[in-house]
Length: 348
Image (cartoon, rainbow, N blue to C red; front, side, top):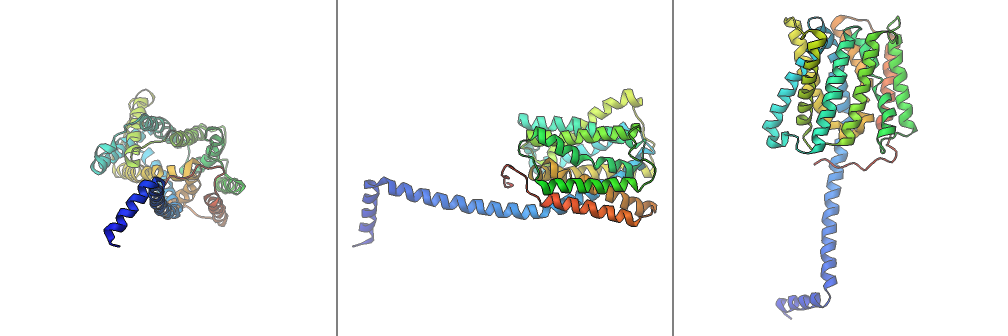
């Protein structure tokens, strides 16, 4: 029997039993989908393995920024310095995003604009405006210690606002252990750095609450715009809010331009904002607000290290022990799986 005759027989059989042909097509489609899912899962797993290193890098970038913020506050009013920081970083972020993504750099959906407004007002203007104002009335190491309360506040708020953001006991133990290490760092500095009567410390605590709420709302709202463009629009909106607030509160604000103020502004704009926020918003959808805000535990270590290297501040063996507690706490939470977590979406 020839080849053509066999093909005719198969065609007749398919007409007589159309289910057989449909079943074959479904099997082929199922194999293709399974292969695609496997490739996406392998790619997503490789990305997740890099996340702890990226969080560590983010902690270093933001930790060093506390020293540069203190440098800048010697020559500028707090709100105006924060506004200049985000005007510069926001404009550069959007220009890069436009060159890279074109029209994709613009928020398009209601969720995009909701995320931009929430983070622009709460995180950029609220957190940084209050942080700069409070740090002008205290020290950089103390500020970094208070900021390290962020994961605790985020965990508490997440249990109320996010259904899928929970940590098992191992993760909670890691949060508590990290907080103990941060508290020990504060105790080693002498005096009473976390005195609740200090207006600067209270304002920084309020700033941390704004950050925690912003990360949760950003996660809950969701956004489709690229992380670089997302952070750029948020920074510009926050800069406008800070600029408006500087007029009545700081008589318009001022900056004494010199080498130190220029270096400080460049680092907090390009390093801490342009680079740091891109990392933060790229990691937030994968890690969630609880894990990404663990960067607050890493910040005090790098803030202290920067002061030691640049200013010659001494390091005690007890401080090294405190850093070890922070590192162990970070590892416990990073390795723990969320309870009833929503399945991750592989990156496009």
